[in-house]
Length: 264
Image 1 (cartoon, rainbow, N blue to C red):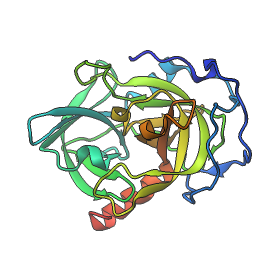
Image 2 (cartoon, one colour):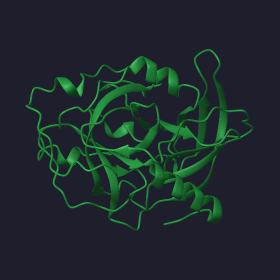
Image 3 (tube, helix red, strand yellow):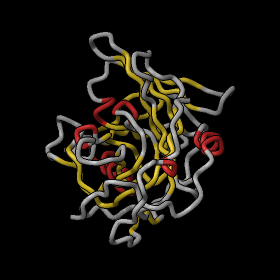
Image 4 (spheres, one colour):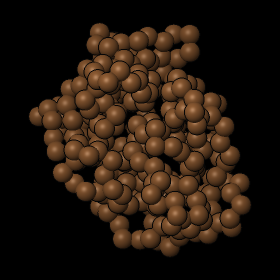
């Protein structure tokens, strides 16, 4: 696992942003607030990374993605159904020459060929299936959970260390929620939208290749899917910033894809 210091240990002084009202993760209305330049005060104890890892192992899909030019990327997905439907970032899987998904707890993993069911490029969500899978574990989804600035979370990433080969073991990356209902530039170049609205803003040391992993709250629920690292915003803010699509929005995309294939 890639080492990462706790956001609670950040050297900058913590400040609480205005408007700490709780909202549902299904709320996708973009807000107009500005982001803090230092993280908010943590509202609960930091999450135990080892416990989170044990919780997510049965339903986290580790992806190996082969590109038409022969390159290989890695990523993550989240199982939705016991027969192998899962979600991942659309820009990671779109145009792939082949995708393999590995799922299961350590010592009991299985690898499957993954096929794309459809895309929602406007929200950067792809719905896929692990061919031949059955009896898979599914996560607790925090669709009705509330998200507030200062909430401790763990985001799951897959980025390699600088100069290293693609990471095969996902990293548990501690973080804090900074903002809700934010808007960021769209990651998927095929998206008709120029930005993604309604995303959760997280203070976490992530890299662009960490896209696609779940964000887990203190109750062990998935509250979002990592979609973008604000590398272009690092000169504006004094803390590392990442973003996640709320899980309610992800499920809306999955259901729409099931009904019509490809969107956006």
